[in-house]
Amino acid sequence: MKMQRSVLAGQIALVLALLVVWEICARAGLSDVRWFSSPSAIIARFGGECWHGSLLRDGAITLDEIALGFLTGTFGGILFGLMLGFMPRLRRILMPYLQAIYGVPRPAMAPIFVLWFGIGIVSKIVLIFSLVYFILVVYVLAGFRQINPDLIDLANTVGASRRQILLKVIVPSLLPSIFAGMKLGIGLAIVGAVVGEFIASQAGLGHFVLQASFSGDTVGIYAGLTGLALISLVLVAGMELLDRRFFGWQHELKL
Amino acid sequence: MSSGVDDLRTDRFIVGAGRLGLSAAIVLLWQFSPELFGVSPFWLSRPSMVWAKAVQSISSGALTRDTLTTLTETLLGFVLGSLAGITIGILLARSKFAAAVIEPLLLVVNAFPKVALAPLFLVWFGIGLSMKVAVAFSLVVIVMTLTTMSALRTVRQELVDNAKLMGAGSAKIFSAIILPSIAPWLFSGLKVSLAFSLIGALLGEFIAAQQGLGAMIDEGLGNFDSATVFLGLVVLLAISWIINSGMDLVADRLGFSGGPGELFRP
Image (tube, rainbow over all chains, first blue to last red; front, top):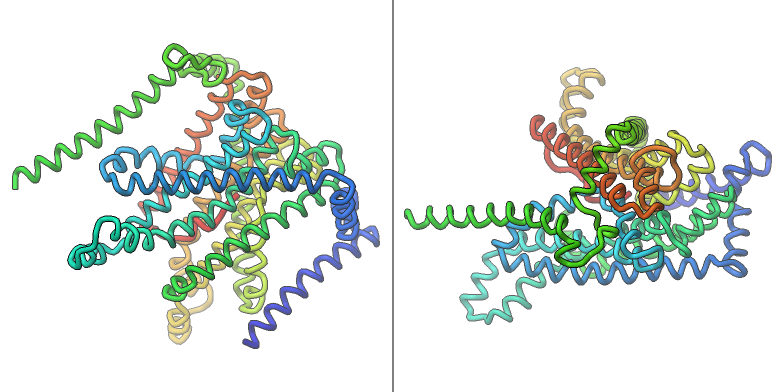
């Protein structure tokens, strides 16, 4: 407990110290503000862009892309994973292809989606969908391997119907790996949105950052990155909390 | 008994034929997509058009140059990032307190989409090679720092203590105990890192570059020349397949398995 408290204090102190050193170096002329800017300038710019500029709208668009791509990809992936889970022969035919697609550096496929779906929000949603979908398929299938066959035998012995077995044995066994897949997926969804916007876009945080970069506006880049950092922090931490809330017992068991 | 074996054979035959058939079907459907579905080759190109583009691009030397450029950036980012990450990881792990303080912060950094730093590196390093190496480096260094720290935690302290009791020096302890126990983890981190490094180099090229596979794909996209886009992607897939199976082969040879790979994202 005491260790935990001093670790937390150490973390806060470290982050504060980094910010203070960054600021002092900028003020004292030790670092070139054209490259490194300073925390106060970034915060001022971030606030200004939120009130007067397009940052909030860009953030909302990036969030839209992430939400739509992530949700459709999660649902689609779970459905297809379930289908393959119940059809072993089809699964074995498709498995090498799934593994090949899974091993592809998928963020690099973004240009195809821009070619097919244009520079608007749709190409980003499809890109994120493709990133999240395959992760969920792979994780659902991994979940199937973790189902305890004894439980199904037992359910059969006590006369459970197929529906009961599905709802009371199979689905609960799959949930932890589905959630693990979603945790990985949300991170990749953010990456997908940014990459898609970098390739070609008219709005979004990635667009904001890239435009700032092309006009040599370093403070603007940092302001956009700050927005992106906030979004990813909220989304990733949110998934982490949900995981602890619902599957905390599993992690404790592992210890 | 024999019917069981027959079943198994039929089963294998169906699965094998299914896989082969699917591959052939994909290539054929792609080639004849304009005739069959009325999809203009503008969107999908065709294997024959991609092949023609490849022949043309190889004879002009452009494809070789672009591929070598991307590979150079990837390898530089990979080597520099891994060396830095492993060093930082080992240094941090020397102090329990420092590790406890910094590791959660690094996990927060890991949650941030680091590819988004590419425009910043463009301002810092300009349009050339160093900017792509910086993007690749930024992806690799986090992976290797975190991997090294968790790998060092798996080293069994009682083995180290025993070796000390028997009078082993710190060099001997490192080579005989620590290195063998962290090697499989490090290797799995290196595999992830190499893949990430390729992604980083490519994304750097997407943003701004004069040569490299990313620049080639970007240019094809700008000209609505889908054959060039697909050619770039096919070469990229080949590279990543070679890298992945190469790393798997080495891991197999050395008897490595396990590791934290899935935790990371670019």
